[in-house]
Amino acid sequence: MKKLNKTILSPLGSGLLGAVALTVLHESARRLIPDAPRADILGMRAIKKGMDAVGEEPPGDEELHDWALGGDLLSNTLYYSLIGLAKPKDALLTGAALGLAAGVGAVGLPGPMGLGTTPTQRTPVTAAMTIGWYLVGGLVTAGAYQALRKLRF
Image (cartoon, rainbow, N blue to C red; front, side, top):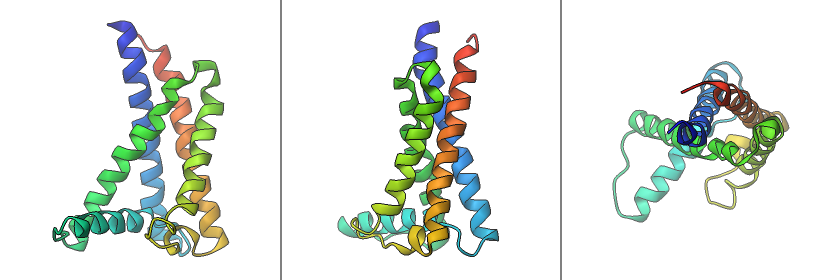
């Protein structure tokens, strides 16, 4: 059971901590920085697009925003949990690589996906913040992963 906890709970827990750090950063900055990335808008657009595709009416903006944040937390938790594929000694490099890949994807993929480019590419500063914040999420994940692997649970 101890091995199972370390192989499943450490990556999931650290992925959750990285996802929470990223979401707090996004949500705080969007209120304070005019050029801040708007991952929440991308999430809202994705949900609307999916619901429209199946003929469902999306909820109002406030509820849709909550859904988008929940979706971001879930998807980023699962994504950052891939750190569990790394050896603990390689966690920092793996976390950085995961964060950079997610950031580059958050800048480059929304346009081709039909979600627009403004939320993450409005200005060069917006794009740089997007990549940097996903990197922060990956680094938080790496630190949490190393710490959780040392716990006895």
